[in-house]
Image (cartoon, rainbow, N blue to C red):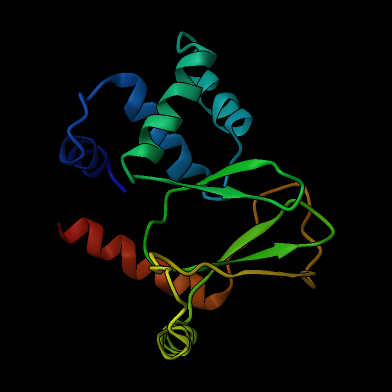
Length: 165
């Protein structure tokens, strides 16, 4: 997402556009690997050393509250952040901290139909998120993952859509 898109997202949420909010949102987008707050802080310190750590934490919470980014909790209770708000699921590596986005409309349709059929009493479903746990065969552990071909295609399509806006 370009700077203009970040500014628009902040304004649409009714937030004042500040350099700190732009920097934090930009960091979550550019890290592109479901970063922790510490990852975001490290990223920001390179170009914005005057942004306080507390400001980063508060800004992340504000962006989550507004629905601009989402929290992703790992099995080890580490909170991470996701700038992709479109419907998707997550692939969690059981051997590392790696998380990848997983898009599958067919799976979404199956889950929606199944849960509508079940009619869970006294419960209104707002969202369905699967956490699929397994091991990646490419053994990437400590650095951002390389997206799968279908994810690359989605991201390149998304980038083209963002540029057209």
